[in-house]
Amino acid sequence: MKINFPSKASFLFLVFLFLTNCLNIEAQTCRPSGGVKGEKTTSSHCNEEDDLCCVPGKVYPTYKCSPPLSSHTKAYLTLNSFEKGGDGNGPSKCDNQYHSDYTPVVALSTGWFNHKSRCLHNITISCNNGRSVEAMVVDECDSSMGCDKDNDYQPPCANNIVVASMAVWKALGIPMTQWGWLDITWSDA
Ligand SMILES: *[C@@H]1O[C@H](CO)[C@@H](O)[C@H](O)[C@H]1NC(C)=O
Image 1: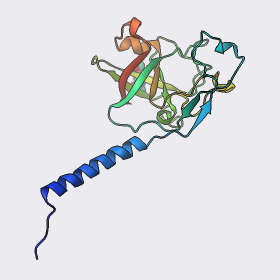
Image 2 (image 1 turned 180 degrees about the vertical axis):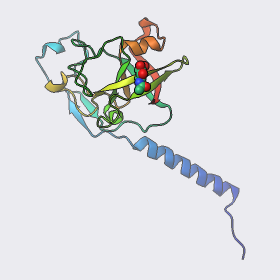
Image 3 (image 1 turned 135 degrees about the horizontal axis):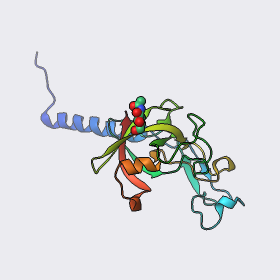
Image 4 (image 1 turned 120 degrees about the vertical axis):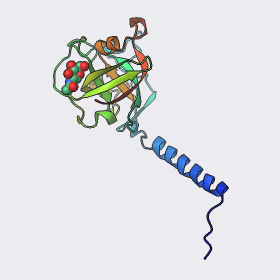
């Protein structure tokens, strides 16, 4: 019996289909779960010079998922204080405590926070200057809701954020003038 192997061209085509399919699946695994709309508010947080509040009428997507994990998951690093009176809006969700700016702690977007499963575990954060730091997960950056009173009228978190204390930025050797927004990768430590 003669077995007909696919020609080289059709084999390559199958590989191509397989790869594009995989990439599609990966891109599709985290879609918005809904959206929230900025409201007109008289909250004192939302005066003109404060650009953190939801813009009235603007719709913000919400996410219950985050991008799939890899050995070096891409994310954006942002800066916040987890201290009492910091911008953190109450104690951290994992331990109901505040944390010093001099301790390396982070909050993760809802999907990665994964119902507290990473609470009080360390993650390793790496940036493209070759440095890395271990930091403890203490809080969630909520991607699933926002723009309401409970969330201080702030937009939902993006689904790919690692919010870090000052200590993390310092340990990564980022000059203070560049603190705020950085491409990083992270993994479970
Ligand atoms: C987690 O990270 C902190 C800060 O880098 C470190 O002091 C601590 O030993 C780590 N904890 C574990 C369990 O590895």
